[in-house]
Length: 596
Ligand SMILES: C[S@@+](CC[C@H](N)C(=O)[O-])C[C@H]1O[C@@H](n2cnc3c(N)ncnc32)[C@H](O)[C@@H]1O
Image (cartoon, rainbow, N blue to C red):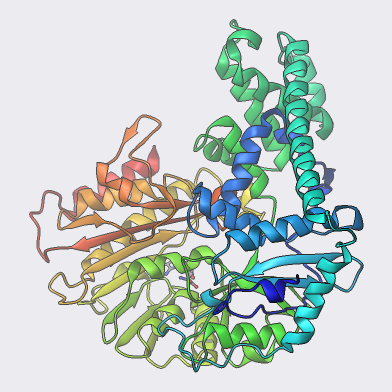
């Protein structure tokens, strides 16, 4: 019996989408270039395959906003499109059957055929492609019109190709079981191999000064890669493999040096980022920062609905799917036969090219219709235009940016997206609220070092110096106080401030927020309302922050498969507070920090 006949009553019809190529199959991360040298990246985490497996599960599952939730992970597994070949087509058939058995009625099975010999299958949950503000009704006939008979026939053809004997289902079950066992054995062998390597290594000797000098003259990335693996192995089992005389710190020091060369960072920045994580996780972070994040777009609900936009783009040969359950306006673009920044829909302002993580501060801000909102550092306007869409072009948004040049891009985006409730200004944000105040909500998407977006801007690896990590936090601290002071605590609907950055350093995030809590006792941290993301630090390398810092959220490329981001939300409960610090004292403190 074909799949069509098996479909239960009331179950939505399957939708066939034929993308040209499915790019969800991860591209090889080999042959990356850093420091002008070709590098092999894949072996680096071989010392920790289990962690790597877990991490990739995390990345997959995170696009649904539920990290490590089994159900969510299963779902993600379904959406991974795998190239097939004839030899495993029966296995695929089994997978398809199982998945369809487990899936809810809103899971639509889609068979995708690409132009080559590879055949893909994937699940496409079209019920999630709805409008931000309205639920789909029966009359929602914007569903793509496909020749169902034909499409189902296609699907059936795929299944029937494999139904060469009556026992095919049993056969498939058996093959699937064998495949699972093989995978398990492979994993065991890999682990055993790792153990053998470590054991063979016995004590691992760090290079002496002469060796180090020689290597500095002509670094051999293969040697460095091997040493990184060896040191990770030693650090994971220091008692047995480490040299007690040198101590753990000598190994960590060497590891940081090697990783800086291998990944092409200044040693200063690598060390700063390294200490945010455990050793294995640090490697995952640096690896993920070498790989581009998926291209994502935000539907401009002032102009269209996500479902209509998705259909229009699919018709143009774009292969896409919803970003995840946590957003109703985002789409991930897997590949496109036309430039995604130049489609008629783009030019007509139906969407904004925007990273997934930059949706988050606006979701936390949760602007309401008819409010007065300040976007203190707003260019080029990805967030301003999202705020406008959520406010349905009502109320007023002050979109400010200190860079006149950058406000040009902001203005053009405002026009393209049909935003009508924005006043653009060009002040140093620190001048607020003198410019104007009494806002219901303020967004401070602060200027930052960009350590969360290294895959987009690799120059960060070498051009951020110690000075930047003094100057930037200083500016961020001044801006956050101005942002707080610009909010009216008596606002009947708001009284909120969101502080965000696309950096993952503690200096630019928790330290800034902690500073604001100290200087402005009339605000407190509240939940961001974002149901995924890691908690902010309450302690970090000897520093202790206010316990409410755990309400802030951190996002990482290796965990959430999105740009690194930090989001915090304050509620201002009073317009006055006891001055336990005068302006001069504050300035002196900031100066002191700068000089340290
Ligand atoms: C992270 S970007 C903002 C991105 C923007 N929110 C968006 O979503 O498109 C930071 C912005 O801060 C601006 N900026 C830097 N210093 C500033 C200051 N003192 N006052 C206001 N804006 C400033 C920069 O010109 C830059 O456009």
